Every structure is written in C-alpha cells, then in structure tokens.
Image: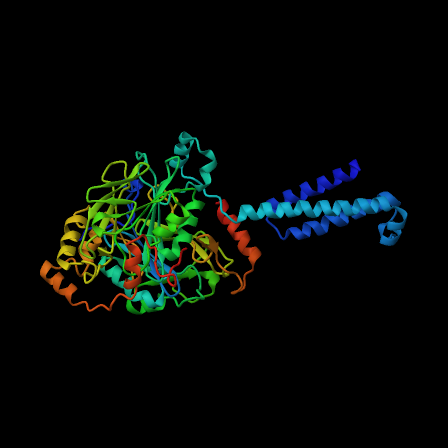
Length: 377
Length: 189
C-alpha cells in the first residue's frame, strides 16, 4: 500500500508540473496515461512476469483485493483531476486584474488586501490625488442611452453612483457593481426622461439603501433633491450640480469637482442638454430653446476646454467629446441665439413615442402604475 | 489657431512629447467599436483608425476633418465576419491612406504587420501582438511600453478578448484549445 500510494503521488506531481510548463493538450490524456501505469505496476507486482499474459478475469479470480485497490485508485484519480480541472477553469475564466501601483499603496493603507483583484483603475489621475476615480460608460441600445458609473476606488467602501440608469439594463449595472466590489450609494438622474424608463426604482427595490437623486425643479419624487451649487459626495470624489434647464425645465448637469484632488480633465455629465454635435429638443416638458442656449453657454461652455462631455444619448456612435471640440464643431450651439432658436423651432421631430409611458413613470423613479406595462412588482 | 483638444490625458503627458487624442466610436447594428487615435501634438496630427465599419465611414472621416487630423492608416484586427470593413471606402475617399492587417490573415492590403512590429503615428506607436484563435489572423494592437507613451496602456483586442467574454472560435479555422493557449500567454504578459 505505501509503495502504491507513493507511485500515485509521484506520477500526479510529475504530470501536473509538465502540464503547467508546456501548456499542452487535454487533461483527459493525463488520466489515460496514469491508469495504465498503475495497472502495469499491479500486474508486475502480482505475477512478476510479462503483463500481456494476464487477463482481467484471471486477476479478478486470483487476487480480489488488488482488483478492489485498482478501482479505488481509479476513483481517487477521477476525483483529483475533477478538482484540478475546476482549478484551472477558475483561473482561466475571470482574468486576474492587476492593481496599479497607486491603488496598491492605498489598498494597503486601507487594510483591504483581499480586494486587490477588484481594484482596477479605468482612469488614472495625478499621483497627488487622494481619490481614484473608477469610471464606466455603459450603453442601452434601444434608446441609445448612456448610463455612467463613478466610484472612489481608493475609499475602503468604494462608494459608487450611477447617473441616468435605464430600467432594462439595471441587472447589468448592478452586476458590474457587484463584480467590482463597489457600494452603490446614489442613483442620480439628470432629468425626467421622455424616451426611456429610468432604472432608479428597480435599483432601489434591489438595493434598498440606495438614494435616488434628481433636481427639485424637475418636480419628480425622489429621496434627495439637488439644487444649483449642491455637491454630491462619494468618498473623496464629488459632483457639482449645475442647473441647465431648456431641454426640460428640471435639467441639471453634473460636473466633477474643480479641485486639485479631483479627476483631470474634468467631466461634465450633460444629460440631454448638450449632446455631441447637438443638443436636446425643447418642444416638450417645459422646454425652451432660449433657456437651453443660455444654459449651455453659461454653465457648460464656460468649463475648461479640456473638460470631457458625457451626454445621456448619442445616435451616431460617438461616446465622448470635449468643451473645446463642441465649441469648434457643434453646428447648433455655435450659432447666435436667434439662429439657434430658429433651428430649434424648425426641427420637426416626431412625437416621442415613449413619452406617455416614460414621463409618468419617471416622475416616480420609473415605477409604472399600469400592470400591463410594469416591469417590476 | 485651432485648439488642440484632448479627450484623454494622463499625468505622464506633462513630460510627454506626444499627446494622444482618442475617440471610441460605436456602430449600432453590428455593435462594433471603431477606435481613432491621433498624435495631437504633432504638426500634421497623424491619425489611425482601428476596425472601421463601412456604414460609419462618413462619420469617421467627418470627425477626422473636424478635428483637423490627417489619417495615415486604417487598421483591422482581423477579417471580420459580422460587418463589412470600411477600409476600402476610406481608401476610395482618401487615397493616401494605407490599409493594415496581419500577414497571417491572408487578406489583401497595403501593409502587412507581423508580431513585434510597431506602427507609428507621430510620436505614438502601437505594438502588434499575434492573438490567433477567434480567427487565424487575429492581432491585438497595444500602445507602446515607454515613458513617453500613453498611460495606462491600451490594448485593442478585436474579437480576441471581449469585456467579460471572448471571441467565438467555430469559424475561420482555429480551435478552442489554441484560443485558450493564446489567452494564457496574453494574460501572463
């Protein structure tokens, strides 16, 4: 017995080492090799002669104990390699995420070594910064809506917020938050949307601690109302609230902080106020082209030219712009105010087909009262 | 004087001689990303496009014109099966553009790249890494590993590595085991 066990262990170790080094072939072949070796050993031990002269029948009849041992070893082999397979699989499938050096040092200070894997900076800032922005731009195809995820990845709890979540992509959003080990604190909307149902209510039902945020001027129901000049804080990051009515009367733009420890370049989440090479329509929900023009010019275009513009929608496939780019290339907002109002007054856009469903729902965090249309209980 | 607009910046740029202008662009029907990279600090603003799509060529060229860029290369990570590349259309409109793909792909282009090659635009460069498995000709373009190159580095993986997924392997010759092998090598780097 001790001899057999030693042989077993020796073969397994040798084979695994070989496998790891060469990255060759299928593990099934390992099993096919090892079992015959063990059989050979057993035959030669029992009969001390050429194994080809033996038969399974004769082995069984002569030495039942050895036969039983053979089966036991086979079971051990299968169990062991099943474990080995799952080990390889678990390594291959979620790729190891190597933290950048700044994150490592912060993580050590915060005493969270077990969370190294999920700390992945997708946007890096100066080494003097005390916060580290984790940022994702996420897309909902049907309404061409962008949802934004921001988190302070250097904070021990990794507080996070979502801007303009959509109902049909809530599961995706919450899944990535869980994968990255973030704690969702706020679900914020730039305005009451007319073209999709917000995911805020669904999110709150799944994560009750989340606070919904929208401007007071929107008239919608939410946990927290923001007003111009307010700051929304997650960890050491904050977003400044700027009133940008025009697309709707309640529109706001959320801008990253203007301070040395905040992300550079700054980021402006403009909702439907300023779009890439365009702007929001002004013909519904208390919209006003005059107000929109003033909002864009006084609240967004006054930001540094390098400020990144992240809109709520894009229909041509653009993902990001800058204040400078829009100042040079936006065909609407670069016109004088009268021309702009004339352009906006003659767009002749079709009636927004979702508005009768979306607006009533979005006034209450996306909860729909008609059971036929409800997507959440 | 046209302002040089940067859509992605890092601290290393303060010491860097190049300034990356980067745009990620989306084609909705095939869910394809096209990437635009330019050296905005170079007087000519040389530019390349990765994996352009035929139906969004006008958008891409329009953006390039608006930003005052000069497109030098249109590069594909592989021969696509889910959309038609915009490379030919682009060359039709801008004859000076060179098309680039891996030699292993077997496709017809102006310039073939092989593993280890570097593609330069101004002071920026992309390193070519062979990543067959989705197709036999797949490559990944990685930004340079040097102090004057963008940080963090960027890897344009084509269909080899997707976000929370990877490319299918049932077509265009290669097998799953080869893909897995490549992924392991890639991750180790």
